[in-house]
Amino acid sequence: MNSSDRQQTIQLLVGEDGNRAAVRELLSGHYDVITDQSVTDADCYLVDDHTFPDHHSDLLERVEQNYPVFCPVVVIRREDSSRQLTLANPGEREPPLLVNEIVDAPIDPPVLFRRLDTLLTRRQQSLELRHYITQLKESNKSLEQFAYAASHDLQEPLRMISSYLQLIEQRYGNELDEEVDEFIEFAIDGADRMRGMIDGLLEYSRIDTEGGQLTETDLNDVLEDVRADLQMKINEHEATITSDSLPRVEGDPDQLRQLFQNLLSNAIEYSGDDQPTVAVEAERSGAEWQISVIDDGIGIDPDDQERIFEVFQRLHSHDEYEGTGIGLALCKRIVERHGGRIWVESEPGDGSTFTFTLPAIDAPRG
Image (cartoon, rainbow, N blue to C red):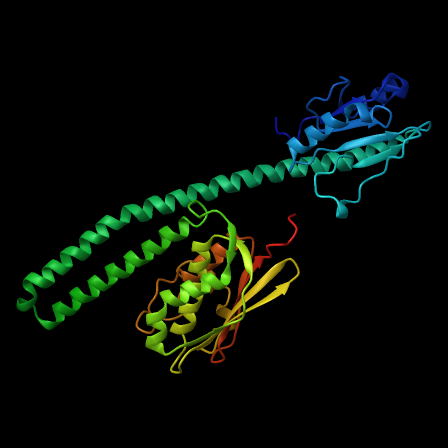
C-alpha cells in the first residue's frame, strides 16, 4: 500500500481529566488514534497544555529525530489553564519548531479537523520530498560512478592509439608522403583532445565525491597561487590582472583555486587581439559575497550565456581557441557545491563579467 493511501496516525497524549475518551471518539472516525501515554511513532501528536510538560522532552526528541521530515505537534489549550502557552515565531527560531498549532477548548470539530488535515498534508508532502531527494542523490551518485568508470576505462585504449600513431610516425615518417603525415598528425591531435575531454569528465564527476573539507579560506591567497600558476600565460599575452581585497570564505581551497584558474585563464585566452586586462572584484551582498572576474575580451552573445556552463559546450572551433569545453561546467559545479551560483553578463565585443557567489563566513546558517 502506498504511504499516501494509508490512514494517518495521531497519538492522543491527553489525560483523563482532559476528556481523553471524548476526544478519541471525535478523532476515530477520521484517523488511526493511538492512546498510549508514552510517546511512540505517529504522524501527529495531540496533547493538552496540562500534560504537555510531562511529554515535552520526548516530543522534542521525536520532532528532532524526524527533521527535516515535518512532525506536527498540536496543543489543546484548556479553559481552566493558567499556563501561558503561545506559538513560536518561525522567523525567530531555527527549525524544527516543537508546537505547530494551538487549539482552544471547548474543541470546535471542523476547526480541529481542518488544522489537523493541513498539518498532515504538510507532513505527507515532506515525506514525499525526502523520498525524491534520496532517489535523486542515489541517481546522481550512480551517474557519477558511471562517468568515472567509463572515463577511466577509455583512458587506456586512447593512450594506446596515440602511442602507436606516434610509433608509426617515428618509424615510417621518411617513407610516407606529406598527406599521410598530415592524416597521422590529425589522428594524434584528435586522440590527445579526446584524452583531455576524458580527463575533464573525470574531474567533473569527482567534484562532490572527492572534494576536500570546507574550511576558512582567504581568497587573496587563492588568487595569488593562481596568478603564480598562470604566470607563463600572463607573460605570453602581456596580461594585466588587478584585484580588490578579497574576503575569507568557507570553502575547499583546491576547488576554489581551480575556479579562479579557469575564469582567469578564459579571460586571458578570449581577449581578442588586444593585451588582456582582467579585474577581480568583491562585493558583500547580504549573507553572501559576490566575486566578479571582469575582462575586456571578445564577449559572449546573450543567446549563448546559459549553455556555456553545460558540459562540452564550445562557442569556437579548436582552430580558433583550445580547450575541452568543460571548464565553465566545472566552475558551475564547484560554486554550487559551495552553496553559491554563477552567471555571466556580456555583449559581443564588449568583454565579459563572470560573477559567482559564496556564503559569507559570518552569515547565519539556515
